[in-house]
Image (cartoon, rainbow, N blue to C red; front, top):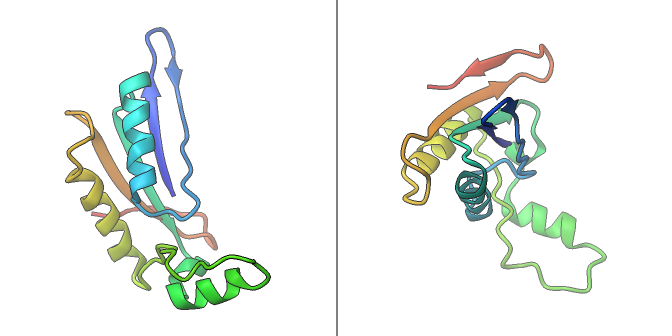
Length: 125
């Protein structure tokens, strides 16, 4: 899950952008760039969570499961499954965002792991 925030002139505004797959995909980067250029967002928060179905499967399995009943070929679709090591996948996404040339100078990017069983949110360095 990726969130970004924007602080307004008179009051603080929070603009969430939830990317359902949770990866720092091209779509996520485009959304962040849009929000930065249009709204001045300068903070990005990447949150992966425990018990994530996408960390327990592969593209092949997802293509098979999600393709059932479709009258379309989804064999080339990358569903961006997470690594089983959620700390590592969070670090990968933070690194990808930090190296993205389209993000505004001064953008801060943080990574967290949310434990859905305990409710804790742990920073990922």
